[in-house]
View 1: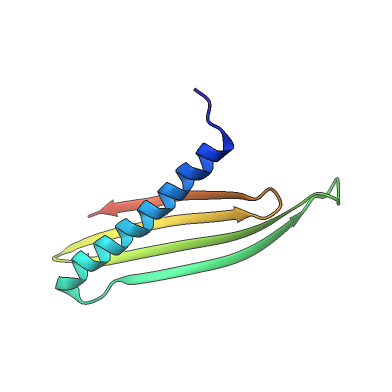
View 2: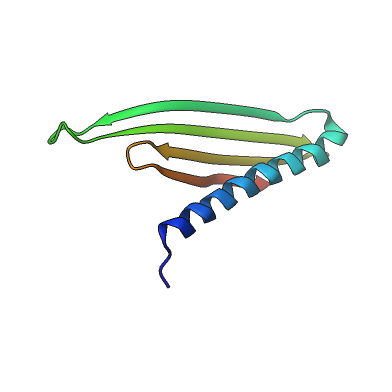
Length: 101
C-alpha cells in the first residue's frame, strides 16, 4: 500500500497534534501533585549549501523540545523533534525519546 504526499502530511500533522495534546494532558494531570514541569525548547535555523552543485541548498527550521515531569518518585520524559524544510516544503515530526520511570 502506497501513501500519497497528502496522506503523509496528514499523518505527520496528526502525530504533532497528538504529541502536543499528550504533553499538555500529562502536564495538567501531574502538575496537580508537583506544581510545575520542566520544559525546554531549542529552535534552530540551518542553511545547507551543496559543495558540488552550489545551486542546491536546504533551509531547515528545527525545534527540539524536552518535557520532564517529576511526581511521586517517578519521572515522565518526552522529547519530540520537529523539522521543516523550506526548500522542498516538507514537515517532519519524530519522537526521539519518551518514557515513564
